[in-house]
Amino acid sequence: MTRSLDRNDARSLDPDEVIRLASDTVGGEPDEDPEVVAGLRRLTAALDAEARLTDDGLVRTRAALVQALTNHHRVRRMRASRPLPPPPRPLVITGLLRTGTTFLHNLLSQHPRLRTPRLWELMHPADPRPEPQLVRECERYVAEYHRAAPGLRAIHHLDARHGEECHRLTANTFRHVIYGLRYRVPGYLGWLAQQPMAPAYAHHRAALQCLLARPTADADAAAPYAVLLKCPSHLWHLDELTRSFPDATVVRLHRDPTVAIPSVCSLTATIRAARSRQVDPSEIGQEWLARAAAVLPGLRRGRGGTARAPLDVRYADLVAGPLDVAERVCDHAGVPMTDAARDAMTRFVIDGAGRPPERHRYRVESFGLRPTELADRFSGYLTEFELTPEFEEGRS
View (cartoon, rainbow, N blue to C red):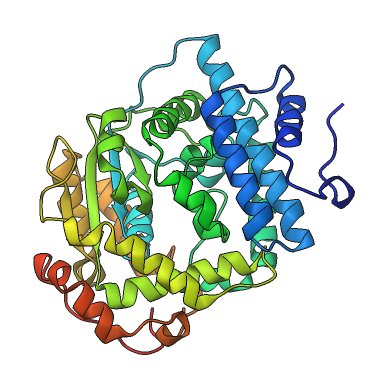
């Protein structure tokens, strides 16, 4: 019998208990992939020692870890049960968080021949239950997330039936920086920085194959031109991404770091506060300053760890001419911009769909950051991509 995940069961984050609960859920022996188990153990140790979880946060985190391991187990089982076709060539959107990746992703997802994995699919890539049940479960997840983090509505749009970041596939290996955004886990992040990411990206591909093999109620009869993926974290791992997806087309978004970095700090603080007793904004500021400094200065226009040169897009250009940018992206990816796609994207822009319903406000200084220092630190990046300074207090 599957044990429940109520408060009485969730006194600690015991990795062995997570393994047993996931195995009970799917039926069968525990998932013994040593790399996955090692990641789970590192993560749970850091969560217990460093994350300052509330009682409710502990319950929800434990359930999330069980779900991640359940997903990993189901993907392995589905892949072993039968051969699956390779995924369509990916069109991948990436860039530092808060650079317009979500808006461009939502805009391109209006193209009827671009297959965009929805949140409910990404949360259950190989779950055999009926689609309506999985959608309802995902809708409950979104409602609970908004209850725990009410400020998220002004920062990032979540909808069970809309496209979402594909870190929800990679993170099932317990090798992903998203855990460092959700929780204060410096010990885990230090370990993660020393680990190869190839296994995580191999699982990403396998999970995507499982997800795409399941027919959906609104599936287009015509074969997709590409599968549309989006995740900022790919920016740090383009080599590993393209080893798993050698035919990928990559689009990189760029924005003034004096705005993008404080904005992602605000996002991080909002998400961590949903599960943690204490959030240190200055610590978050230093974390994101270090992460940005590890990748942005080395970027060069039109060059990256991809077989086909990445397409670089400025946030200012996306805001000023979203349909023009969509045309550029489709042309670069070899995706025909059909009349139906253009009409759907035009309606999306006119309706203002996909934008957060509230304005995102924050103070840069709250995170121990100064715009002038950020501009100096990333001056080479600003010059390389001809980025226009856009800092304005209280603006996202």
